[in-house]
Every structure is written in C-alpha cells, then in structure tokens.
Image (cartoon, rainbow, N blue to C red):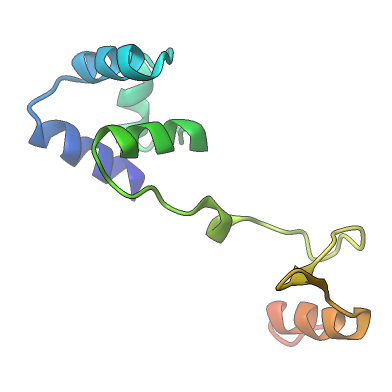
Length: 105
C-alpha cells in the first residue's frame, strides 16, 4: 500500500514530512506540501500517479504499473478493446464481458 511505503521510506531516512516535501520540490520542481504527504501517509487521500512516480523515483524504488489498475466500464460499447495490438472480435468481447461479470449476461 502506498501510504505504508511512503511513511516507511521517509522514516527509514529520518526525514520529517516537511523535509521530504522540500527535497521533492527541489529535485522535481513540484509543489508538494507537508500536508499532502501527511494525507497520503494517513491514507486520507491518494496522490496523482505522477506524484507516486516521483516519490518512488526519489526513494529509488520501482514504481507500480498504473496500467494494471486501469478500470474499464464493461457496459460502455464505445470502449475499444484490443489484444496484442489487434481488435478483439465482437463475439469474443461478449464472452470476455460475461466472464468478467462472473458469468452473468
């Protein structure tokens, strides 16, 4: 979980939330505040993915792949789905949708 990783990495380096915000802002020209870090560590709010990448880079960690958490509205017929760069045939899409809905039509 991001909140736990952020807090653990910051404490591992004996940094205050304010010091971390200052360091991030200097290195990455961001406008991260101490209160933002506090909310992220508490899990009150989630940071934008761009901030997650910055923080993971700062701590020398591999950033999570945001593509793995992408959400798609299965009811949206305008969503273009592909596999290995090729469009998925409509009949296969319906099978996939049914599978993802747990067998429901």
